Length: 251
Image (cartoon, rainbow, N blue to C red; front, side, top):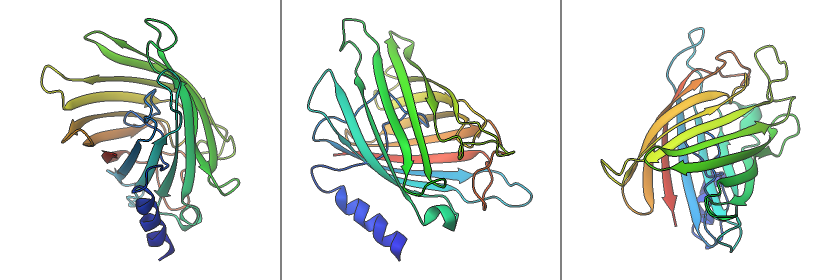
């Protein structure tokens, strides 16, 4: 009941003018996009395991996130958010709330032709040495005509939690992505590939497509190939590849 009540509470928060949530992302990694001032975003993301480990498929991941614009400026932007994250393990799911925030500059803001830049943090959990992943990152992005947008960055986090299968530190890595609206086919179709480095449970190659059903509602379908299938995730799970379905609603 406590978990259901929290989900209901977060959905209710989405109905007010100022709300909170997950950082704007590509398929998996943070992007240089921002929610506008006085706008909000509701994200419903599911990650379903596509294979078994020792006969066990393992729980998927469900993420309900709310995000809002933080700054009323065009050339210097920010956003802040909160997530309800379910991972199929009571140790973690007793502390399902995570916070995030980022600031930065959109393309051409600093000078003509300037890339977009974002600095942020996410997976700020409330339980020390259990959910406080405390990931900090920086990303730079540039849109190239016909090719699309290219992004590159780096992240680091809590070395006690971002570990490999031997519980050794694996708390950092590169962030890379390509994305493009496929206007030749339809302005509603968007494709992306992104990569998060590292031998921890977050390291993955991800690719997917989005279709915008309206100005405010879109759906992403993607696939996530994890760098280290044996990386420590939680006591009741494995790090098998996932099929992801993501619903994005802007308001």
